[in-house]
Length: 336
Image 1 (cartoon, rainbow, N blue to C red):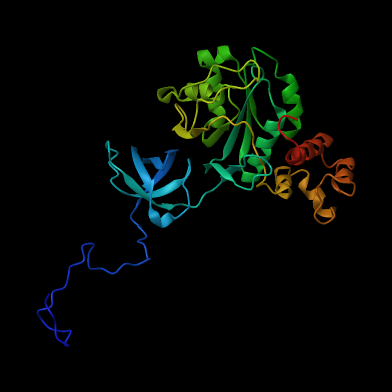
Image 2: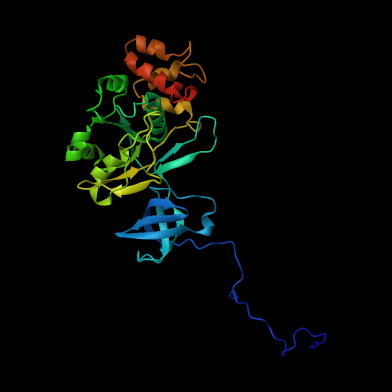
């Protein structure tokens, strides 16, 4: 073994090269200001399919984003191979600020929030009038989540050839939001898709509903060139459909401007994340009446000023009833 003298600056000392480069490591990551803008179309086991200009690009999240996850509908900054060719992989280096976030929890006792979609401005709540039977409590919960996220609700009722829609529409008439009623025959001939498309034009619309209501069938009619597998089976014992859509997917509308986001069927829609005090903002005709409410009023108690406000003729009593029904959804299970 060679021995060196006391002088550590001898010219003949060899220095082993750094295989990873000679630049010192740093925690400062590049900002990638020149990154291309993309939209997340779907997420599957850590791989994100993004639309960059007119190309579909496969990407993964950059390490510098940490635990921050991108979801369907997110606007992202993408670098790397953006050709969209097979076996290429780009990198998402930034998630842009979201205009809206639709969340849910597994149940009302679960503090863990699940982001359903980002940057949508409309929520289409799809419900069958029969086979399976409608679940008004689930509709109420979806409405609360929509109002909390700042999304405009749209009620889509399917299978009107099996049962009338009058009773269900009467229950939600005071909420004054758009709706559309479709039948299986209209859906097969394209008439239903045309009517729904008019209400989706110019919007980014997330579709939610439990399994078997015809949600994905409707999406396939709206975007026929990107058909998804549908479900035609509803369990005769439980009255529930079987999940066939396993991941959310954003698709551009055919013959219209806008996007439709198909989401997996839900069995429950927890509202642990929702602050009930924000629901009143969806009732602008009632909100001024809360000025005289006691502090931290739940708007469903004896001293609530909304009762006097409505009695004085400032708002329809049916609207107050609807507000209180929605506020009470966190105290009830969907099946109650």
